[in-house]
Amino acid sequence: MSPRSSSSVNRLPYQRSPFRIAENVSFLRPFVKWAGGKSQLLPQFRALYPKQEKIHRYVEPFLGSGAVFFNVQALLQPSRALLSDTNAELIDTFRAVRDEVDDLIELLRQHHKQHSESYYYEVRAQPPQARAARAARLIYLNKTGFNGLYRVNSRGLFNVPFGHRAKPEIFNEALLRATSAALQKAELESRDFRDLSGVARKGDFIYFDPPYQPLSKTSSFTSYTSGSFGEKDQSDLADLYAKLDRRGCLLMLSNSDTPLIRKLYAEFRIHCVSARRMINSNGDKRGPVSEVVVLNYGPYTSRRPVSRAK
Ligand SMILES: C[S@@+](CC[C@H](N)C(=O)[O-])C[C@H]1O[C@@H](n2cnc3c(N)ncnc32)[C@H](O)[C@@H]1O
Image: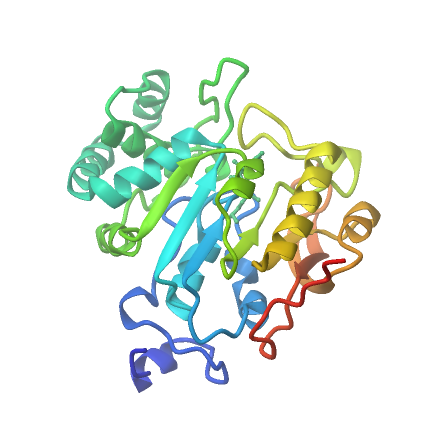
């Protein structure tokens, strides 16, 4: 492990952590904004990561903006990562950052020069073919569209309106280059979480961040892709969690604090964290809500997953 320098410790509010921060990745953060992104919860999550001398593989099947992946890269320094999401365009964007970062930066520079409301709608209307160009379009629309939303219509076409932000940061070259370096040992797949059953191995640390079970009918927001995530999906996910627990994986899952979620994960350790979320359909009404993090191991104490296999 790399020695902890006093400068890196001073920059971060993590002095009492047993983790050593990897110098080169300590400033990584998501390069897109994503609904349900976990950046605000990272200070609470870090106390819940497994305390292992070495995490060989980190797995995240609901990747979104990758906020937790970037945090885990800095703190646990896994040798490999397996990252996936059903949003194929998002996964292709991560691949472009990993494999074509020079072309991507050049294309983003061009978007930046031409940025205006009418240019936004022109770009939105014309999805290009080449991967780097499609990735630059997704990042540009994400940074300049309304609230960083990703929303598609029934034909799969991006339909978020212009965001009217005074000075959007369309891209950050240093961040994209550091992200590209951090992704070099990551496999990126566009797939459903259920397919993880065929690839997860004993010892993998897996973080699940599914679309949350809605707290009320009006708070439902599941339009990350053209599909939705219902109770059957939540229950399939709980079955997968129990199966991977028996396999010996280290499991961490976040969700809303509802009776259904507490029932599905009743046999595991349930921790509460506090998040600021939109709590009803009125965007002005934001407040702290309790969310749950389900673990199958003891934070900071256990070297092995606490298996409840029968
Ligand atoms: C709450 S977001 C993840 C946010 C992420 N942790 C972050 O910090 O940005 C949930 C993600 O799950 C993906 N998703 C929805 N249904 C899925 C499924 N059946 N299998 C895999 N991914 C799915 C969505 O595309 C979305 O990116």
